[in-house]
Length: 201
Ligand SMILES: [Zn+2]
Image (spheres, rainbow, N blue to C red):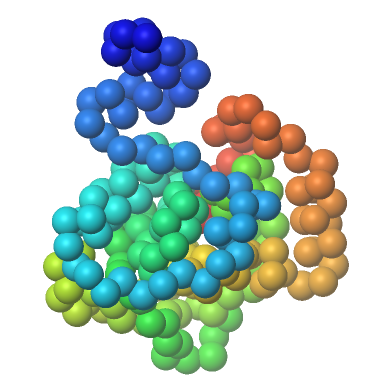
C-alpha cells in the first residue's frame, strides 16, 4: 500500500487525522471499561523529551475534545500527569500531590471524557492546593477553587485509578451505572446534546 493511500484511509476513518497529519498528536481517549483507567499511575522519574511530548499530546487531545481536564491514563499512558483547561486557567501538572486548605464542599454536575454523555452530581471539596512539577522538573503549585478545584480532584483521582462514579452517592451512582449500561459508545461519540464542556474532565 502506498503512503498516500495509507494517509487517505486514515483520513476517512479518524476525524482527528487532519490534525495528526500536521504533526499534532491527538490521541484516542480511553473509555470506561479499559483497564488502564483502573490502574494506579506511576510517578514520573525522567523529566525528558518523552515527558514533554506526553504533555503536548495531553494538551492537544484535551483541546480537541473540548474538555476541561485530561489525565495521562485517559490516553493510555500510566504516568502521573494531567492537563487542565478551565476558563482562562490552562496548564498541566506532573506528579501532583493534593491537599485541602479547608473543609468546604461543593456539589454539582460532573462529566468525564472517558464516559461520553454521562453527567451526574458529584460532591467535591471547594478548595484545593496541588503541588507538582513542570515537564522540566521545576516545582509548581496550582491553587484551585470551584470548577478548577473539581477538575484537579477529578484528574488526581484518575492517576489513582479512581473514577467519578466512585465519588457519587449510592443513589446517583446507581442511576449513572444504568445510564452507562445503556450508553452506546461504539463509533463517534464526540458530541453530546447535553454537553457542558467546562465540566467534562
Ligand atoms: Zn475523567
